[in-house]
Figure 1: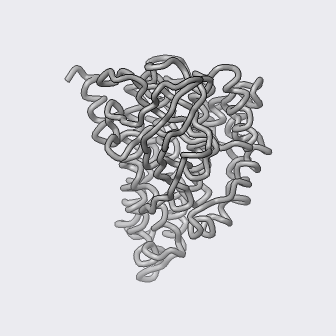
Figure 2: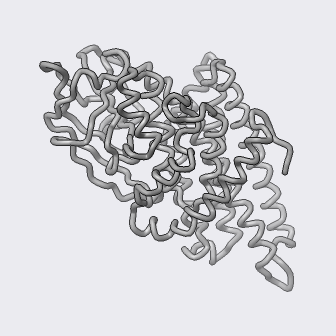
Length: 380
């Protein structure tokens, strides 16, 4: 076993091997089937819950393990499942939708949503993006008007991972006419009358249910307000750091998987009398890929250490996200090129990995937004 790199310990590396075995044995064999179906069954969440994987980072009092680093291992190793959509669907539930409930929810909300979420009995999605408000969260238009005992919500959300199957939707709404980032709140909206979801067709991530959601006069009880009213922008900012770390970890995992499969292919595929990996052109490409993967991993693990230390990790996380997402797409595209014509065929799965990787520079904050954050951190 290789020497662990902090914050990972020997126990975490042993756990990594067990997660990889599970992913390769129980998830990977179904990847093509679920990609074609544009769906994976809820039984996947139930199986992950049975193994304790859904609650790795959450406190033991809610059914978790309280080990954030183990959760990072899971996210990285999910890349071996062969479907970016499957990994995204799992990650959206445990890494994006449940954390705000854990961090900002009342005890009653945690018992009603976090506990069954960790058990795989209730699936959650986070809904922020709107058709006319992508990265500009200040332009959110979905309204929550005060009503007796709660709110009435009208509006729409789009590009919501897990938004078709979700039982509970953690939703950003406007609760005030204040401009800019003011007047934003979060409501936990249960699936029910007035909540309609429709699937969106995508370039990649086919196994995930990415939704357009509409809210038509949906009544939400006051006890479903998450955090303080009109303070939702702070919740968004707090949640972004972990989401972007997860994306960096997932990209590192995807690059590693593509590299290992391509290295194996280059030693098996022959051209001009010898394995293609023995030709200088291919050997140099693989050397460059190995260097890029290592750089992305080092940057991401550094950002993870800063985050876990409780320090201001915005700059480090942003750098990790920016570096790994574009790198993953370029690395996997190069891996596809090394596969030649086979890389363009679905049989070798590298074309799927390339399609899945393209979302990285867009989701969770575009490359342009990441560059803007970094530029401002430099005083520009």
